[in-house]
Amino acid sequence: MAVLNTQFPTLTDWAKMTKDGSIMQITNVLAQTNSMLEDGVYFPGNLSTGHKVAVTTALPDSYFKKVNGKVPVSKGDTEQVMEQASILQNWSNIDEDVAELSGEKPTRAQAGRLALESMNQKQQATKLYGNENNAEEYVGFIPRYDDLNAGNKENILNCGGAGSDNTSMLLCGWGAGKVYNIFPKGSKAGIKHVNHGKSILDTVNSVTGLEERQVVFQDQWVWKEGLVVEDWRYLVRLGGIDISDLKSRTGTQSETAETNLIDQMSTAIDHFPMIGGCKPVFYCNRTVMSYLRRMAKHSASDVLSFEKGFNQFGPDIFTMTFQGIPIRIVDQFINTEAALS
Image (cartoon, rainbow, N blue to C red; front, side, top):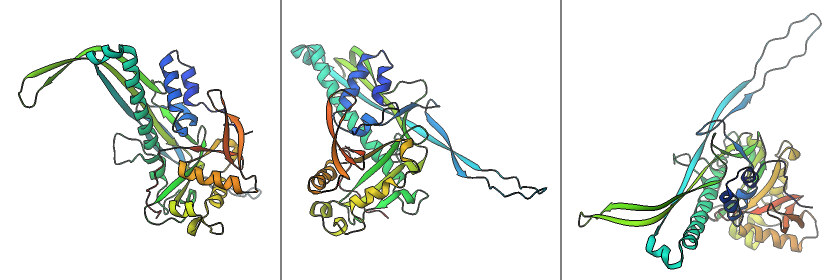
């Protein structure tokens, strides 16, 4: 039965540990779109601005000893890595006259739903493509695995796509000491809602120079979150998936091509040191998922299959799996990635 490993705390689990009922509601909203936000694991950071980890860069040497002989002293090396948390915000201002038309609560609730969907998409896009050149963002998965000459090049599998009509798939091994999300020390996981009530907005008209006022209901939404890849071996990027080849099952995505997605997915699993020491999940967009569904339908093999499981909110679901590992949809994967280099 295909189920997500439940030994690691997700955003929903952290929500259950708080008395703030609004967080529970928000978490359900997040689950409607990008699955990575639903089943990624979360831990509190050790800093108020993020999380600092020590990563092993070299092992000490070991020696065979002769009787009455001496053994050289050696030591390993570590490197400290700082992963910052970002602060994502959204403000909602509802004019008091507008709020009176349909009632204050339903009007503000509708504005809140739009704000949450916007934050959901922005957070997921950052988790994938967040760039270190943008100081306000944390670094996403794709920029961390974008250089075929980098130290983590072994976990960047090139599916052969050229041009700019490519996408990626990720195999993520969620778990402590591996790949996980963090929220800053002293804060809470998930989205914080602040009801600022009825406020007066003071502005100056840029044309007349006159002071203007407006009475509004104000709501503030704050989401503090970061991403940590403590052990790079537990994240594999399958990049350069050529969309046109995928749809036609030709070229780089023909059945006999070494860059065929199915073969690369199998290879990706072997790059994890221990598949059982984490919560493994494949992530892709709907274009790739549609291709995999067709493959599962026409394949006589049970490597790709649909299995009955359950999600974190109760109802049964049918999960696409590859060799028993769930495959989940993330809409924020784009189909216009550049070729790997």
